[in-house]
Image 1 (spheres, rainbow, N blue to C red):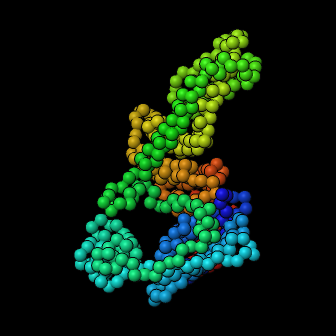
Image 2: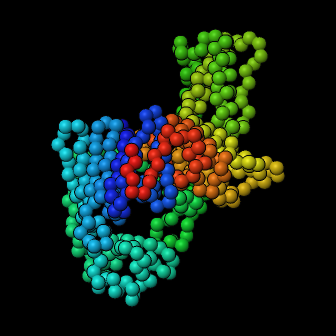
Image 3: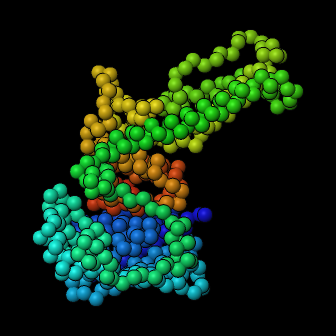
Length: 441
């Protein structure tokens, strides 16, 4: 199913006083949210991610009045925040959706669940290391982990007799659920260098994201190599039988054979350059005129080789673009993709580095480029917060040129939040300035 594209977003009453309107410029696959700290750039990205991923409980943690989204197919989604508490904390989010112009709206509402009882609050502070730090947020002072009140109620409520005393929410209407299932987003936040494993038992153990992506590349290569090996086995098994069969599907002339041979060599060179295949010696065509029986064998061999090479077609464009972009940025280092993942070589000494030994700027560049190229899907909305982090000003100036190439390859769109004039550079036509308390047209 084709995902509808976001055309316009409006936020009203963010933090009680901010109104923003954001619209994609025709012909550009990205929009830039530009403004000083405190105008809600990151929060807007998180709000959109909450809707796209159908996590309205995350939207409940943000003080806002209304969020309006308009899509390329005419669909509209409205989320309205309702507060019944003095501190402005949302107690309810009402969602309205109009799937097509003229159709009856679909309505659904989510209530905040499980307000923490005084009994549970006292037990947490006397019997555990959890302490309240701000509105509805608690922190484990022994390790710094932060959770919401709702998460703590789910975790400890049964111990003190509060398992779930809040309002139960009605299931989402099927039409709303189906529409949200057509949408997908990817949030690339500022905490890019490490991965939280999520388990409380392993909460002090984080994974370097650059190492994780290196291993993910290794897995992708392994899958492609396995597909090629399985196909090769079948082609080799049936080669004699097909060679002896009468068929008019063989290349008929020596010129066709030599042309196909040279064409495949060029294709293999691309695969070899970025590390998808090894440097094994290739079969050489004999000089001079080729005998008819050899011509038939060579024709079948090249047809089989074409099928083998095609197993990499689905990954080659992304691998090639990643290889090109990273090697054009890194100075004095050569990046190679191999069956072991990412290999990094210092050109002057020939020494190899582990990915985690790269500088923070190099890791930010590699991680963000990797996630944009390999994690993005057609029709997805990519939400990028402060891509300029740790990047040299020259790299910043090339960011949107690179992003546009990536988005054209992946078929996705992006919304980028920044306050760096270097990264915006000449892309003012895509920029939406966000000002405190001012509606942005």
